[in-house]
Image 1 (cartoon, rainbow, N blue to C red):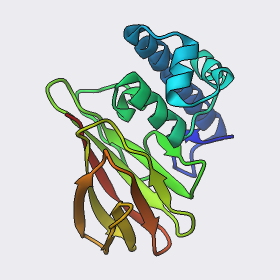
Image 2 (image 1 turned 60 degrees about the vertical axis):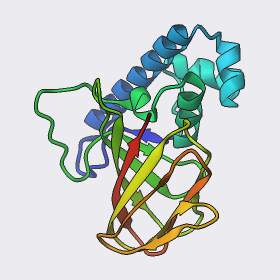
Image 3 (image 1 turned 90 degrees about the horizontal axis):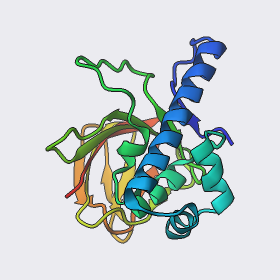
Length: 202
């Protein structure tokens, strides 16, 4: 199941794209191993807390798996770390991410794609993602770590965004902030709905 890709750019050579994907998956694998060791958890215990199969986690840690958004969120919550820490690309003094580039994570439940643009540096607690979502099955997210807030700015299209029980309908350039530690939803109402989401962690 190909749910993690290094770049969205369609004109990249297949060899370069495959190498980038291997690098990203290898980086995720190393980070999961490091954070599990930091937390003092066995493979079995982390799999239990995250609600994933032990065999799946073992594959991810060996670099043989290809995780979905849902699996990485679950592991992040179980490890007590932001999602971005598991997928953050190498840092540079100057970082430019062109449209269509960046580490891309796909949902296995909906036609929903996120691109990590920036993760929180030391002393800051925020992650920034670019979104591209298609109409159809909505992306319903389980609660994240306590105290999490989400901020969404819609760029194109229309969407229902926010807590499951009371999402707000957004159009281009609209903004909404809502608690991310309760069940929440993103439902695209128009093709190629895009925007930016900022997650704050306390």
